[in-house]
Image (cartoon, rainbow, N blue to C red; front, side, top):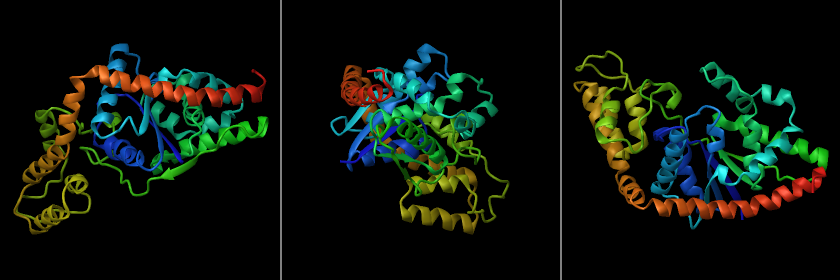
Length: 321
């Protein structure tokens, strides 16, 4: 059976971009093979030094994943730090990882350019990511086109290790999600917490409505036809609306006579209604947090069993056993 692996970093409330980029594909994959999904709290430490906030974000990601359809009977769902063996593998992998490989990392350059302090953890981030994948002998790692380099680095590190110590680590294959479009944010850029342009999945109704109504538009008059090409409203609407609804809005754009405010109201309605069942499920989970904690504990035990086998092979290969 094919083993899939995906991690998501707990860096704040999950948004629509996270849903289409990670949550929805993860829920779909759990029915196609053996799925391992983890909350990457070690990774979060590179940019978040606020213990209460980190605990809150971890709990939030767990609630969001389960509310969006993750089935703990089908998928192994756990907190990264509950399997600390990953840090030992990270160190061992770092001894075969060329500095030049890390220096080419787009992620490090992007994050330091956005003002995140340069640290060893941030620089060595790809090695921990490689350990996340290799520790669980993942066959396939789903990634978006913009994350392809991350998996290429993991494959390079695995190959370097196997060249040095013999065939020990499984070299994973990427599953490039070509069909996943970049989800645009309120300002037309890629939706990202870094740009403060997100629409949260489970935010309060008033806040989500306010955010949708703040979407940046051009100055086309109400009576004039609207441009379909680069409309943030339309791009988001197409993610949620039925085909006939999309066609109707596109026709209204071409015809003119309706202002952007009315289109934003329609967008809010489809977003709010799309997540209604998930909001109800999340409320149930919040009322039974012991269940959520037990899901993570059980997932960590299962993940640890797999991790121990991999690390034993690695320790033997390098001479530590």
